[in-house]
Structures are given as structure tokens and as C-alpha cells.
Image 1 (spheres, rainbow, N blue to C red):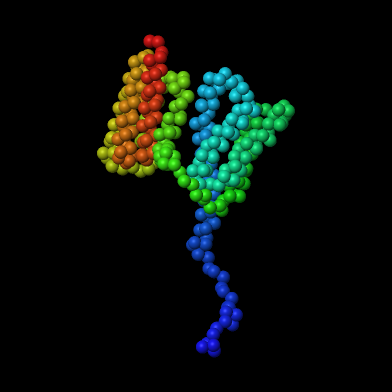
Image 2 (image 1 turned 120 degrees about the vertical axis):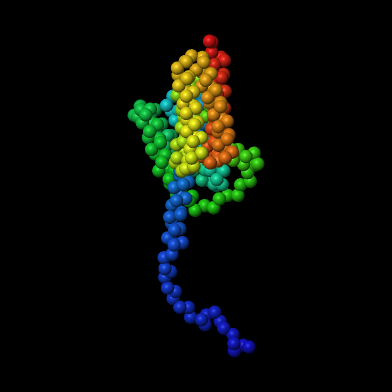
Length: 296
């Protein structure tokens, strides 16, 4: 048996031929770039969401505490804006299972550009517009550098609380509520012409998704446009308090339209329909409050 032994170093390895380019090999860099661009797009959307959603809260809090003028200072406003963007970005990055070191570096990309420009602003070398514009322009390459640096990191394991999962699943409802926060403080009645947006949005999105092919579906959506269009014209014609009630009624009844479309999911995505249900009810409530708190 000893004569039949074979040692590893007794086998001569032949030089392997260079691998031929395959679809998998060529697709890998493209997929990596796509993930990087998608990550940057997510960060941009999260930052915008942070500004849109938290901005009104700062205004309400500042007015309540009597520090509205201080928050309006360009240097304070820049830092507040960076904070809003950082909060939105942090929430989304952690939900997407990014490491804390990447989150901290991305947060630095929000603050450092403004901090660098605050010195020349305090010295009177640049104006408020240059401070805001320059901070945002410098922020873009800083974000790209952080994203490129951490592009190969594996997601960190995160145990999400069921409440967090539920909130994330119903984020359209939360977004709709947050968008109307400031309106409850200073309620007002929207213009009657805004009711045309309600059925118009469904027609535009349905056409873009090519979901209006059936005659019945198209007929229903056109009927909705005619109904809310007629209600708009009546409200414009009568004016006054009656028009205000008609506008509130138009937005409230459209919530039922949203519920039906959410159930069927034929014309618009269910997330959009969910967003519209909550937004329509909230805005209708705001307008009813404005009518009841305004003298006839």
C-alpha cells in the first residue's frame, strides 16, 4: 500500500487559463454601482423627509417657547436643518441595518459642511444664502465619500420591535399625519380648486401604471373626476361658508374613494391609497376645525 501513496507536491499543477468573461462577472460591478446609487437616493429621500416632517415641529415649538426669532437666524437655521436631515437619515439607515459607524460618519457629512461655513459667515465674509447653498453643495461629495467607504459592509443584525415593524409597514399613514401637524395649530380651509387634485391624481398614476385599460375602470375614474369637478364648480360659485363646508365634505368623501381603491389595488399602489385616506381625513378635520373656530 505504501507504493500507491501520492503526495500533494508530486502533482504538477498546470497553469489555469484565464476565465472567460461571463454575465455574472460583468454584472457584479454594475450591481454594486446600482446598490451604491440606490443607497444615496435613499439617503437623499430620508433627508428630505426629515426636513419636511420635522421642520413644522421646530416652528410650532419655537412659537410656543417664544424662540422663533432665534431659530430663524441663518446659523441656527442651518444647524436645525442639519439636525432634521440627520434624524431622517439615521432612522432609515438603522432600519436598513447599517452599522453605527457608517451612521455617525453620514451624520458628520450633514454637519461638517455647515460648521465649516459658519466661521466665514460669523466673520461677515459670506451671506446667509451662501451659507445654506454652500453647505448643501459640500454635503453631496461628503455623502458620496461615506457611502463609497462603507459600500462593502455587511448588514448588522437588528432585532426590530413589532411596533417598529408595524410603523414601517404603515409609513404612508405616518407620513400623512406628520404632513398635517402644523395645520392643526393654524387651521385653514383649502381652495375649492384643490379638490381637482383628488381624482386627477388617480387618473395620472393609473395612466402611468397602465392600469386604466379596462373600460369599467376608466369609466369609474372619469366619473370620479366629473363628480369632484362638479363639486368644485359649485363651491366656487356659492363661495363663503357654504363653499368651505363643501370643500371639507369633498376631501372627507374622497377618503371613502381611497378605501375602495386600497381594497382593490387596481389603479394606484395600496401605499398611495393608504396615504390618501389618512391625508384626506386629516385635512377634512383641519378644515372643519377652521370653519367652527371662525366667526360666520
